[in-house]
Length: 81
Image 1 (cartoon, one colour):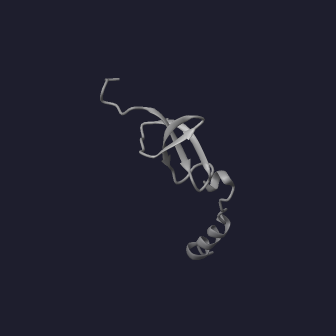
Image 2: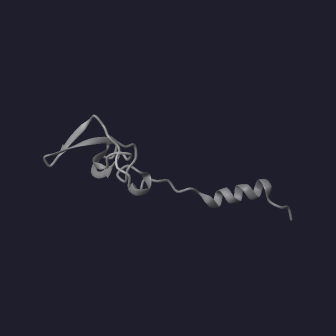
């Protein structure tokens, strides 16, 4: 890598307020807001969706009725016998 052309890559705290989750990962993102975890201060980035709030991971997703959709399609556009 060439020196001086890449953004700094450092530990950052990501916070999902709706799922009450805070985790630390490395990123090039920065923020003026900080949070202290175990005596270490990290910049904090708020995310809208994480595994704590995503419907697929929480089990609160809805199941689509695919059989009813197929029948509806066949009634409208299906071949006549």
